[in-house]
Image (cartoon, rainbow over all chains, first blue to last red; front, side, top):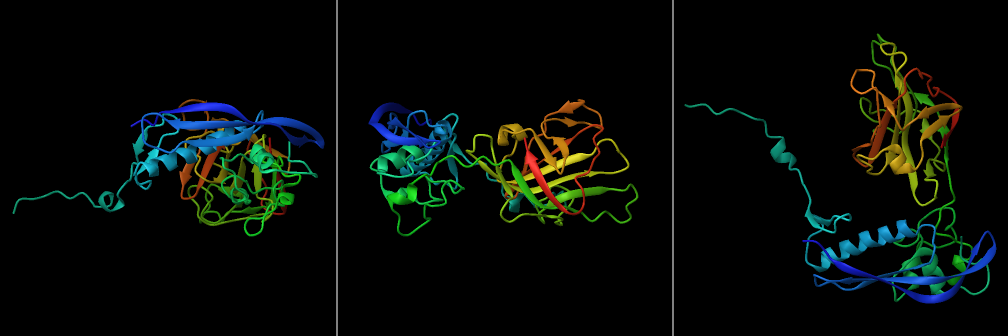
Length: 111
Length: 222
């Protein structure tokens, strides 16, 4: 299943004060709402000021957390499932079983 | 870019710099929590307990850009007998120094074993850093770097945004590797994950200078 959602950006607050090298400047706070389309999940949002130097990194981090929260809301066990952040597909983890892999191969012989 | 160093600070200021979901709450903004990274530009923010707006004066989500680590050089114990003069020098934490060796040698400074990518958005902890080689292939020594975390399949540049390491003046390229045993002449090395760390090895043709086996070191990532 692919988690589909709308991503809506709005100005949350205008002209908030920050500094760069001691020089004050103002920036708007941008709120990004993530609203589920094809599944029952709670809407999420993330706020950050415009033109933040780490914007992509911080949004990616938030999306990763958000997808995991939705996975849990949908009743999946995160020990066995994860959401692929590239495709948004719910994916089953490949879990190797060392107990099976460690069993040596033996040939059967007719008695 | 930082939060103001004086005057009024609001939750909107803090969310604007560190990110966060509405409705905002101060409890979202402990250092080391989900929104506030732990680095030199957030040291005034508490990790728990009482937290106030004044803790955020002059703080920034962006880490101080750091491209150096330091420590003491050492040498791995050679095989016995050491017929081909195998050598491995640099520093490595026991059990985290890549293939074929589990012992530690040299050491990393407890307070300076991390560096950041050029943007200061990601911090890396170094677990090993050494050059190895022998008389069998005297002009094809190998440089190995280990980092805490899973970077499996990624190149050095993709992971760190950097290309080379220079230890006490000895520079090694970590973005391409020479194949001394045939196959493509050069390729791009990628990290292999094992346990809680990843390591990457690069062989440079005709660059058999070791990192040194004793004394203090400063390593610079460029």
